[in-house]
Image (tube, helix red, strand yellow):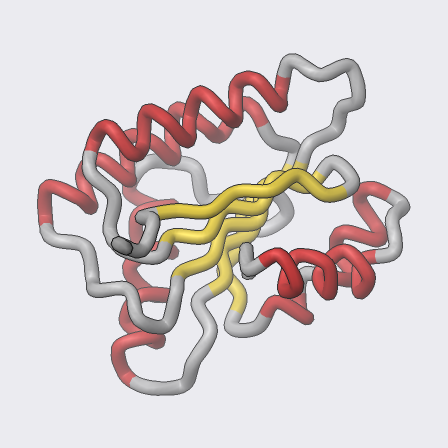
Length: 148
């Protein structure tokens, strides 16, 4: 059985997306359709929390280009976007820098709307403040479902 490229879940108006491996264009299209469907629900705002598996390879140039375009397309659907790249090794630090760089290059960098985090727990108080939800409980449920 092959590991899925991504996992998604919606918990209290938070759209969780976990990349298990670098996506191809079709994977990105499937995720984007799920995001559009969630955005159509009558309960805004909607926050995106995207995370990378520690086992995920670094995306190649084509995958980075696809992800950059995806990020620009998905941005209007969410009031905030949080990227989580857990880990202290050089690879994880580089991935955080790459994501921040993509934010700057695509013109989507805004510290209040789009942030990169080292740990999922750093997102919890921001969810509480933005959505008025129990942020730690939301993150705990996301961990239980395997989407962070």
